[in-house]
Every structure is written in C-alpha cells, then in structure tokens.
Length: 198
Image 1 (cartoon, helix red, strand yellow):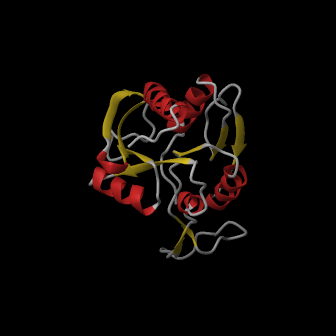
Image 2 (cartoon, helix red, strand yellow):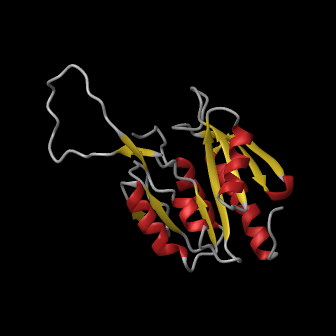
C-alpha cells in the first residue's frame, strides 16, 4: 500500500534548511529527485527502515520535521516469490506500520522542536489538531491531498500551520519551494529567539 507522494515538499524543506545554515539529515523513501546540495541523505524503503534511521539520528537533533507521507498499512504476509495468477480473486490482510513520529515524540527532550505534517482528504484542520495533540508536537502543517488539486505530485501547495494555544497561519497556494522557505524562516527565527511558535 502506498500513495502518490513525490517527496518534493520534504526535499524542498531540506534545501531551504540547508540554505538557512542548518546541518540537515534527510531520511527519504524512494523518490526520483536530485539530492539537495550539502545535505546528508539516508535512503530507506519501508516504514520500519525509516523508523530505525530517524531514531538513530533523533538524539542530537534540535528540530525534527516529519514531512514524509508514510503508508499507515502494510501487507501482513510478504511473499518471497512472485504470486502467480490463479484464482480470480485474492484477499490481502493488512497490519499497521510503526508510528514513527509518535515513537520519537515519546522520548523527546524538552528543548527539541517537533513538526509534523498532516496529509488529509477531509476535515483537514480538525484531524491535524487531533494529531498535534496526540503526538505531542509543537507545530503541525496541514494540507489537502484530495483530488487533482491536492498536494501529492504537485509543484504547488497550500498549507495551514497550526500551533499550540490556537496559533494559525496559512501559506500559499504557492510553489513548494516557497512554502518550504517560509516555514524554515519561521522555525529559524523561533529557534534563534529560543522561543516556540505558540
């Protein structure tokens, strides 16, 4: 199970963070994008691999931005060889993949800043705010992935930044590179001021 996420938003964020003078580690699933200059890239394939790699990098990091659209489900059984066509139907049982952001959030330091993304198809702000609270995040970036105007695969995006205590800001519609620069600028200023976006 997967989705048509291109990775463009995550790569744009990595490039913008590097341009802002950050040291950037980029953990990425399979994409067809050039690596951002000066960024350490860690390619992974499965949710389990992404959890292991982000967990290994999480300890010393100051800001974690989880923009990957990781699939929530995987087949319970994986075949070692090709499954030949025989019967006219097939039933595949699925199980949940690991909650990467939730796992890392549970052991965060007080001075670490956690940013999540919420790719939603409906009730975007409601679901994003629930995720912000459930996963103990500082900021969540909500965007729609519904229909042909959704964020998946597009060069454009429109996001809603939601912080604690009701803080809200809309960015876009704009190219993902512009959205990334604006978000990194906000985070960069907040860290320099040793403050939190409310």
